[in-house]
Each structure stands twice: as structure tokens, then as C-alpha cells.
Image (tube, rainbow, N blue to C red):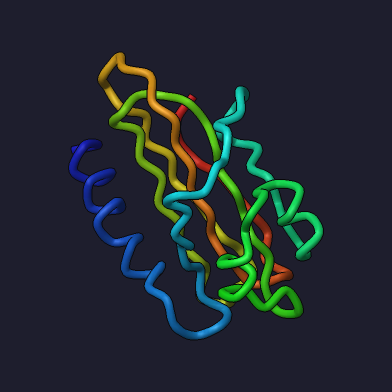
Length: 132
């Protein structure tokens, strides 16, 4: 039953991440960017609130700057090393005041880098659930 619930949540969350209106959580593509997966718990992502912080966190991130309006949004950067089967899904509350990220650890013993970058409303609280 637990596996079914987690699977259903993982399938439902990406619908909330589709690009579009400001005020919705959306994942920003980071393929090709050099971001080092940091050591430490996934439950403490890096919060990026302006272009200067973005330059420090992700050098060469000009493409990301074009996708984010820092007057209305902030970025949440998750980077970790873990199982190749690790999953992360995010959902924004209906009122836009809370962004909840559900982490599901993988079952394989391979060590892989994971990087996810999300744009959420500037005033939203960030919560991370699940995992270790």
C-alpha cells in the first residue's frame, strides 16, 4: 500500500511542475551545467534569491537567469549524491505559500550525482519530506 501511495504521488507531482504561470513550482533544466553534487542531507537545499547568488551557486547560468523573475520568484537548488534510483518531486500548495518536495531514496547501491533546480514564488516556504 505504501509503495502504491508513493508511486501515485510521484506521478501526480510532475503535473504541478509544468512550466507556465508565475506562482507555480517548475523544474528548470540544468543539463550541461557544471554543478557539483554537495555532501550532506537533501533536506537542506540551497535557496537562491537573486542573480548574484545564482552566479555563485551555478557558474555560467545565463540561461537560467532568462527563465526566472527574481522580483516574483526564488530558486531552490537540490544537489546530492545517492542511489541512481533516487527521486525528487515537488508540489506547490494551492495558496502558493508552501513548496513541498518529496524525496524517495532509491534501492540500488550505485552512487550517482543528482541535481534539481526549481523556481517557486518568492514568499513560499520550502519543506522537504521523506528519505533519510
